[in-house]
Length: 369
Picture 1 (cartoon, rainbow, N blue to C red):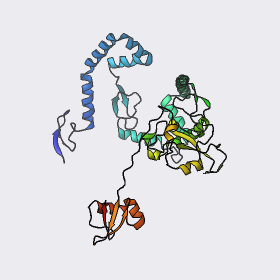
Picture 2: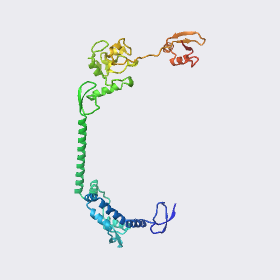
Picture 3: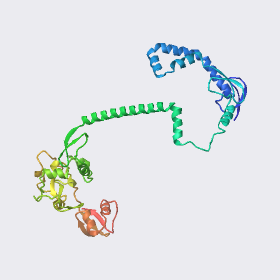
Picture 4: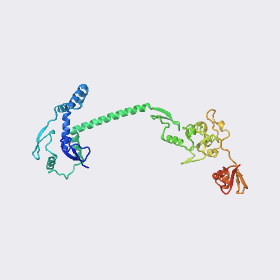
């Protein structure tokens, strides 16, 4: 949509399509910028003089970093010099602020470029090496300046690497210590404050011991319990049969009956804690045979005030009676689990019927006694 507007510079009417447009042409826009520059020139110079008088040390530092400071400042104060030129294409006289400009307009510039490149072989493309050479000349002026810049960058890089090396050495020296492996008990030297094992093999064994999902987290008291450490503590003797355990009784990933294992005096299934006071060394076969049974003298085998015995109370079993639809008794079971085992009817349905949630289940009526 076109809107009629008036130019802010020359006042001539024009049709604008952009809502932010204020000038009828680029010439009026450039003239307005130049007008504002000349208008605010005195204020800007006064501000520069005042700032330089208030900060003499900053002025000297600025002059050190900018060799052309005096030249640029003098140009700013006296204004840019206008050059009188004659266009080499059309011969028209014009003035410019750029001493290297040779044409009066963009059209003459395009014609001059076309005539200049007439004899050039444009089918041949520059190689990457030639493009790189042109880039160096455009950016740094010469190869000497480019080499100086590379040397400076290399110096800064070496300084940064030296600072990083010193910082890491200081941190490493601060964390230097000697420790004892929690798996095999051997001494090791480390610079890692969180290291607990002497090698990768022991670290994997410790990680596998911590990942035992069968032991709830709330029952783990000593997380550093390992088979090797327990073997050293109990001198490799099974506490159930009193015979020596054999590390060599193993074929690949399959272990034999005399291979050592960790056994809990009070089984984890009965609420036993995973602590040093509740673990003993046992043969693999002895551990399997014992399963989760509770030994009669288990409490006596625990050191005094070293382990808190957790009582495990199981829910009492409910006697369950089986009746026909007519009300005649068929059988009486000690629990619903036994009833499922004998009759093959699911325990969950028997329990719902016994609680009164259903009239019958499996063709029978079930009741708690």
